[in-house]
Length: 164
Image (cartoon, rainbow, N blue to C red; front, side, top):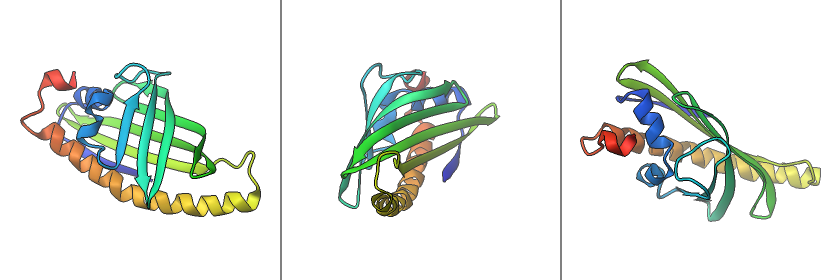
């Protein structure tokens, strides 16, 4: 499920702010952490480690930026990763739409699915149940992160230099 929020900043500034992993702690922590494995600024092919903890389950995923159109979309994927003994595929996707010169609609979705290509069907079904529980918890966390992002970008302390 995608969560959407309106931020009263131009789409280019919002995209640049989110596209720089050094800013992620201002709105993602304490639930998620991103650490770049290459450049701190996202570009297609760049990689980051994503860390989260849900219901005492520590999740570490190695994401790759698979699609990036500045001002429109930033999509990361992690394929065939192991979480708590189960193989998963994951996708994090940011979508942007400038609905006026000084306002941007920002959508974010996070999907974590069992990778059933090499898994016993019964184990895959159980893993799917666990992951749906995690995704249910992540919806609330995503809402909170988007609110923190809005507050951060609309505050007077954010300058153009920080988001450029």
